Length: 501
Image (cartoon, rainbow, N blue to C red):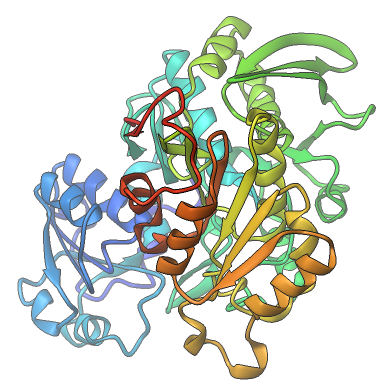
């Protein structure tokens, strides 16, 4: 590995301690998805782990408590009174943070989340790093499942909960670790992207689009960030690159590493062939160097997910995994929570949860889901919540993303106060633009109003597709438990019930 503990931590070492004798580790902002997973992994490895965060609440609080991790409610310098051997600092923690200041005052050793992953989880393993604006979580999760099904006992650190493992991390004894490579910044003392800390044995680049407007100025800024990642890939390593993304195409030309293209282009090494939608499954063909490689079945929906699967099939074949293992894994893969996840059905109305927030993700998610519910309407419910979607940079890009939806509900962003007035997204304008396109669209100031509207409007056979990167005021469960449904006719085939995970 390029970034060993001794090399990376030399910038952050204050105490002169022997890092082989670390026992106590504290994580600042421990309740984030990645930080929480890291805390649990370290606890599982035998370290004495503590953490702190604001507004500690389920499910992460329960998850950490079940692992025996003590979490302090709120941030305070007293949380470091036990003088841990190492402090891991979350990327949202500023230098002026009370625990960051106390860490510095006490001269404690510290590092970032990816540095810790490198040292404690990835050290000595071959890293399979999945990058790109879209599809990282699903691609990483499917790859981890294929490795597991092939008896390779993988480790992984992924930004979503894999249903097959009920976890977003795993400590395996095998030689491979799957890492979701995030382009977001690392820490207050390292403003570079997280994925630059990893040395990939193999990597995937799914797409490059503008996102994360709070830290990236424009698309060129993002392209430069991905360029830095691709430039550092070793000549002995392999990069799988999507063939239909112009930005990706520009970055992978004339690289020292082996570059393998995948997608739908006739001249790509790996190509998606014929696709047949047979709810609840999708059958698809894969060609390799122009010849049929195999026909696969999956519960994943949408062409974008089939392309994600294609990149994983390519990696698995490159690693020598038998096609039978690949087929079995694709057939049995249960997916990732919050990615086209059916949360339940009530009175024949399906409630689905998805993480989509970028215009491209919204478009592809709606297009993917609609063919699987041909008997009813697709009702798209969207909460602009990210730092990018709450800004007007995508204001004129969003409308065509909803073209495949039958009915559209747009919530007013709940955190617009964080955005300068002249940069704010307008849900009212989006709805007017959608109506100008002939779409049935409505905007709402709060979640309760959306629930009232849907319980009166939704009918048996409809699917309510909720898209947000946050909890959306628990709208999914509130819809499933709501006894006020008026539009549904009868109870449908399943009656009122929530689907088990």
